[in-house]
Image (cartoon, rainbow, N blue to C red):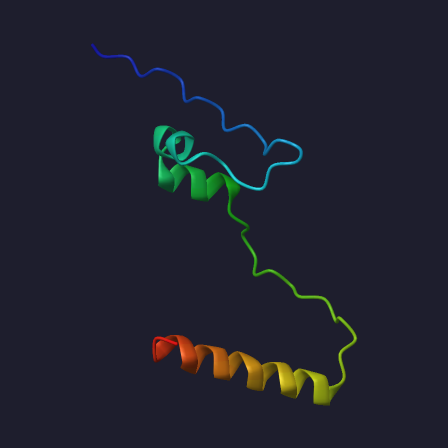
Length: 73
């Protein structure tokens, strides 16, 4: 009879680090990693205090950047 070894715990992200090592994620298993670490709810973006005009200008800039990247610029 084969016994399963206990799962290695996924440690919290280290202070000053903003990512996990790919080899660690592979060792733990991507699906398990995402189930344990990924947020369960959508990220809520706070109101940053931009005016409607500023938001419109940022949307235009993002649209231009998207079009430029699609055209290989």
